[in-house]
Length: 399
Image (tube, rainbow, N blue to C red; front, side, top):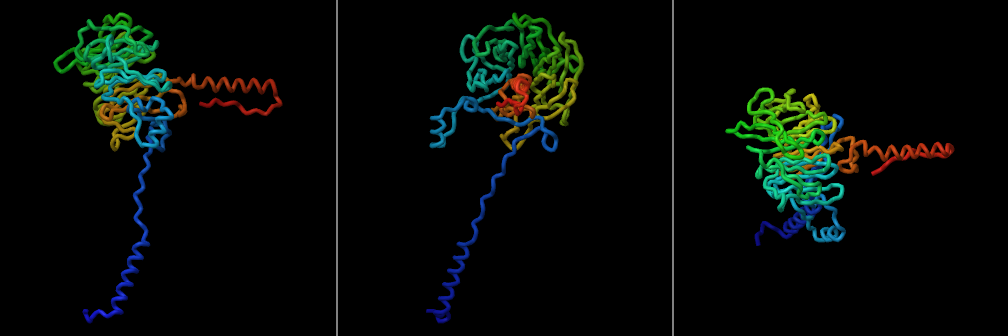
């Protein structure tokens, strides 16, 4: 034994070590970092008054179809997730009265999602009417679906539930058909032919709605007023004005219903109101124009005069609400909701107008939504008139 360490010294060392261990055990354990709460996007951001809210993301049919109690209980016990048919490579989108049609070039079909009925259906998967590369899609006032197939180079028409009806424009010489819109009031179809580097067929083909016969063309390759360079999409306003995404010239061109040039707006650049890679277009009930820019990964909203009103969405930290990488198709339903598709993240996001209640049915026009409230108020007023002594609060409609 080392004489330098007495028994008393050893006892003190043991007691000191025990005290140290006791203090260490009583020390507060380090706290796990608090997860940062994800704030859902609002446009424009505060302190400006909100005009659009992010509402939801749809990636597969599981996000639409109603869940059953047995399935929900099983997943709660096992931890498994819901499984549905996913969006593979979505491109175009159109929305009408809560029915959303998404063209998917990878699955070679159009996916119909009825957001109110909470059901779905695949369209164009079998003959007659099998699709190869559905790019342009639109729905007319009767609910018929028009699909411009870039692979088959023709327009395929289905009823609202996906039953094949007929084929149009198969005799027209196409170069690169990409976008389509329908003008029911004037019985016309507007189909965009993007042309190509070695082609002069940079046009909008105007067809008869019933027969598909070519009526006249708009454009031709160039950069002058009324000329087009790699056009991408077309939309029609209520007054018949024709808005064309002139992609290669980085602008929007406006024509009257007879195809006569009216004006342009936009231009190449990286500031708001300019374009770097404009792609698809939509027009709402008030004539406002919505332009998707793939380079900016957002939607720019202009008034009918071409003045910028607002930006919606953009590049964010990954695949998060309001974050896009390769946006393509856009649609605006009668209730003002925006539907925006992203090819890279394989999703569709919905943005709701700030004035629209969260519980409002999809696709219900604002005046239709206000009708129940007006009827209830009228009934309340009638009841108060017949019994003036009764104390009664005005009735309100709820959804």
